[in-house]
Image (cartoon, rainbow, N blue to C red):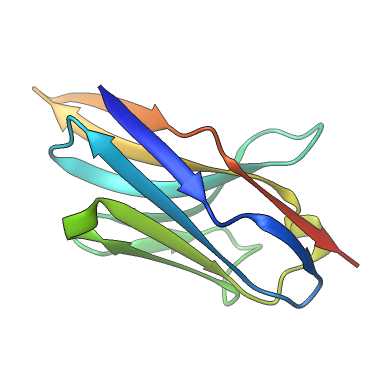
Length: 119
C-alpha cells in the first residue's frame, strides 16, 4: 500500500505565495516521477509541474517562472513553491507519484489540498 498526503494549501491574496508539500509513504520503491496537478471547479484536471528521477522538471506554460517543483528523495517528498499567485490559480492541487514494478506503471494520488487566491 502507498499513501500520498498533500499539505500546505490555503487562502492567499493575489501576488502571494504558498509552499505545497507531498509525502509518499508505505511500500515505496522505484519512484520514476512525482508531479502536481490541479483541478478547478467545472474544469478538467491539468498538469502543473513534474520532476523525474534524474531531476529534470517540466512546467505548464501558465505557471512557468512562478512555480518551482523540487524534491527530497530521502524523504519521498515533493514540494511546489507557488509565487505571484493569481486568482486563476485557485484549484485543488493533487500530488501524483509514479512507480514502476515489473515494467508496469503504477500511479498513486493524494486527496489534494485546496489553494484559493483572492483578487
